[in-house]
Image (cartoon, rainbow, N blue to C red):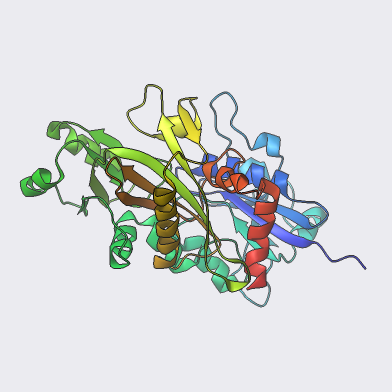
Length: 369
């Protein structure tokens, strides 16, 4: 008899500003699933937080004419995941406004038990430990980092603190909590320029480069529109280097990918949202043109960072490498962008692990635990 297919609920969209990028990642994941091995259950989350069972058409989950895809109430039938480990199932959600009755046979059939969840969510309410906590409560295995690691990696302040405790170097920074401003002594310590960013956000949302202290307040206000806690980081003159890390197979040590360099070559001051996703303004070297010694140093520090925050599954670890050979941690992404052209899959493809096999390995990892 043939082995039963693994039922994979790919969850995407969500309430964070990274909603659209999450949809794009999910479209690529869904398209890569081998239908002989996996049965996909595509679940979109609207910006308001409603879960809906969607068609999962990869063509509808792609950037078109600089517009990002979006999940709405009309995208599918409402479902929910009860925090009940004895059920481990998606269930039809009562919705008096639904056009089709939520207990329609097609919906009830599609939302029975699932074997594993792939939370292809970026940012708040997805990459920060919240959905991981729900899945733990529900007793459903899932791809990626657990509650603590997701929360710690999402919060750039605590990422840096854990890194420093593990002996991983970081650049100078200051933390501004609600109501706080940057004192003159801190301005002198950090110097100009600085980067102002929300402590708990991704995809470069809310980040500003400040070259004049007169612009600091506006930059802090822009960051606080996303998160009440703000980081002010000294600009690091150097190269932006990334490394992918995978959980070791059979309980082994984490594995580092070939490293990559991101170079902004068009009219952008830094690697912002438009440069990442909408404009053809970046060049990527995979592998990066670094010495063997520096390459090994980046890979070692990437695996150390993975362990320092207690990651599982996968992470993309971003660094700055200065002209004098310093390697400084920038951040850890526990659910990085996941299209075939995103940096994490591209780095692993350079190691010979092609996209469909990478997706399959990630899905099998929590099941093997």
